[in-house]
Amino acid sequence: MGFINGPEDVMQLERELLTYIFDRLNVESRPLLGRYRKEPLPSMMDVPVWTFTECVERLARPELADDLDPEAERQLCRFAQREHGVGAMFVLGFPLSARPFYTHPLSNGFAAGFDLLFDGLEITTGGQRLHRREDLEGALRARGLDPASFEDHLRMFDTGMPPHGGLAIGLERLTAQILGLSNIREATLYPRDRYRVSP
Image (cartoon, rainbow, N blue to C red; front, side):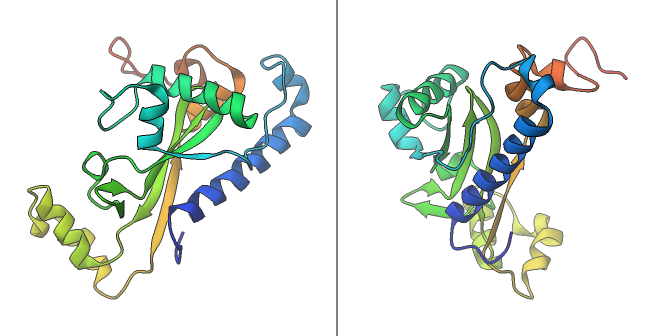
């Protein structure tokens, strides 16, 4: 989405989107949903935002230097359930070096990017992106990459780009969490793993 003021705009859009989807599922698919969940799906409007640093401190896990592991995600969702009544939270401000080169900085080496954790699993990655060509070129150089190799991408920024951002929902992950499935492969039409590559 364009003309954003920061990653908070994208997070608010996702709160509203998921609240709408969950409400429709609670109303229109109640019999089916009831076979998988004891409680209706929650409103996501009160999902808190915790910084990555705050999450590491809450977990007392200083070894989590640039990402969260599955146990950390589950534990943070339990904290959010206790404190906010919804087992979900946005984690904002991962170390910038751990995010894609096009991620807008937040402050002091942290990224204006987020993950949404829901019922113990990351279901979304999103955030604000860089919108000036010179900033993108600088970010590429800082990672030891040659901007000339990205010219097709960079050319789009020559005529101007508004501050923008977005998110990507993992639909299979979201479906697995909504239904409480034990494995994401149960929510995937054609699951792939090291033992199955076709169809």
